Image 1 (cartoon, helix red, strand yellow):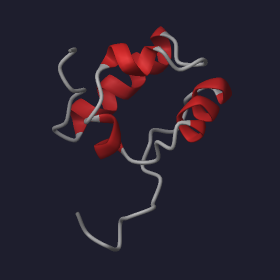
Image 2 (tube, rainbow, N blue to C red):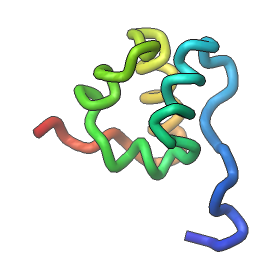
Image 3 (cartoon, helix red, strand yellow):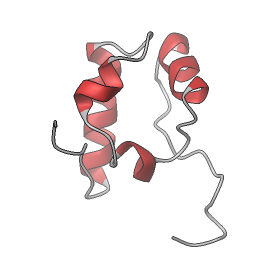
Image 4 (cartoon, rainbow, N blue to C red):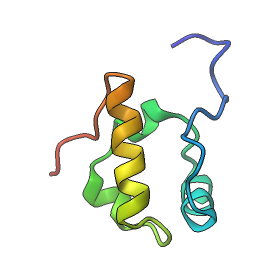
Length: 71
């Protein structure tokens, strides 16, 4: 990962405010971070609902990424 990109928030725009707060509160700012966790883990965050999951899934896929497999 490039040092230039570290710390830059590249999460998709258009997420609901609760979803944005949930991700920020859990320390997620980069798509690569989300690719290390499963959807089940992400669903545990208060504010992450089906629409946010779908938007995140689509954005990950557009970058050649995906959520980690459920454990």
